[in-house]
Length: 222
Image (cartoon, rainbow, N blue to C red):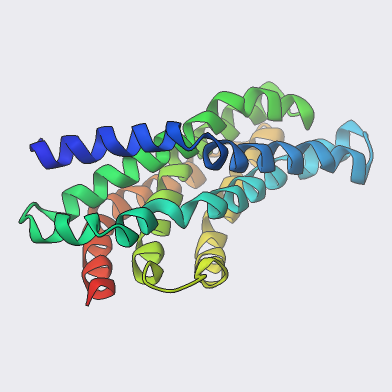
């Protein structure tokens, strides 16, 4: 790993923990959404089990959109993104490292909090295991695909709404397969096919997305 890439990794992590408000806001939003659903639909355990996986996944997608915009925003505004492009370092590698940092600060806390979320929504152990597997495979996919859209809109003023309009339809297949896997687990049915499809989507995104992000950033700079 080159010095520039190491520097980007350590700097992004340092900035994320320095801006604690932006780091905590998506997590607070997710916790509020998940904790408000039992109040809205009633505390019935069967109802909560039925809607729980969808609630957690929708909350994860919406909370990720809150922090997604800042993925390249600060680098674009202070000119460091242009310097990285001109440095001659592989931009796809730098983009991959920034996506990794985004996943670590945005979704790793979600995985840590997932037992609490499952408790809120009365998920069984089998349902929680399936939910955790889909979150482990699906959340990196959210970061990778989301970074492409962020790269395309990084030069726009107030591109947050456009970012949501671009990404929410793209995330629908992931939402369908993830909730289907948890529903199958609830019925004691195998859910390997849904997990395999999500894994294939992740592998494809890992192979293609860094190059697409690099291209979108170059287009935005021009």
